Image 1 (tube, rainbow, N blue to C red):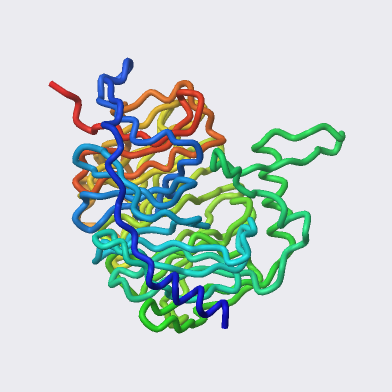
Image 2: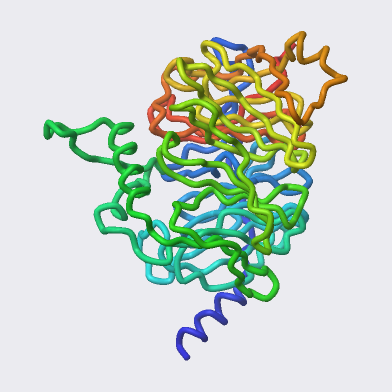
Length: 426
């Protein structure tokens, strides 16, 4: 009864946004000339993963997380306010149709990656919260195009303790931590330890499920179950019954990218490996809701930004050249160009403009679904990340009007949220 009373009290709570923070610092990037705004550098700031939507449908507000709760940035001047003062376990995303943010709290106060939680929504206009459902375990990862369903994954049995203990995020930096030793007993690097952990997690064969939750009723429904490692569940931003998900693990050991209907039908593999050692991943939906883009790496380092239209079957592969590699790519709101967050071989936030090869432009009479159209990418540098440590992922997002790219970086010695203006000042 006491728990019910506390839950009832929580339902009645509303939050009045506090006074706006001081105007954020801004300056021209010394290398590119593009305007940079430091949105927030409070300790423990956390911006959303690259394929989670942080923006309201009108594009004027962006949510992010700090230790004190959920904050909102005004994308017109990048001033910020505290929307919800609460201990939030995970900030999830903003809905597609209404200015409502979704998040989870941990009823036990623990730090488990996918432990028990409670799913909430908060209205960005009124500050009113709504309790949606209890989640005994697992993680919510996406919301349907019509804001009717949430989707996520859950481990039906716990993984071995040594595996479960890895990959937890540092509460101060938001970066995951991995550790391990090699055959010679020496400590592994971050990347080596992560690769070792991922191989062990895949080999464990933990039973898993992808599920949906009805936002209005809290009803839960299973979509599919497997002993494959299921992850990165993403609704199409246009089709409310179409999900994409991945078989997680070392990319060379899995057929990674799949689609499925919310009723469990039409399970389809998106990319068929053609070469030994070929890998693909970091998949995301284009704004059109029918094109899936992903990072494709073939033998001898041949690398593509590969696109697959799930309706027509058409494929477009854009060659990734020197200095164009990125941890994540994303599409401009109009779908015409891309962004990249760089890597240790080219530390920039960049724009990439596609150019189809002559042969691809000339093949209009051929079967577009049967042949792959190829092209290249032209680079436009936006923000210099030469001092960035990529154990922190930038996770860039275009604002819905396409005028800014928001990202996270530690270039000033600590994690902060930045925005770079896409157009260079004249």
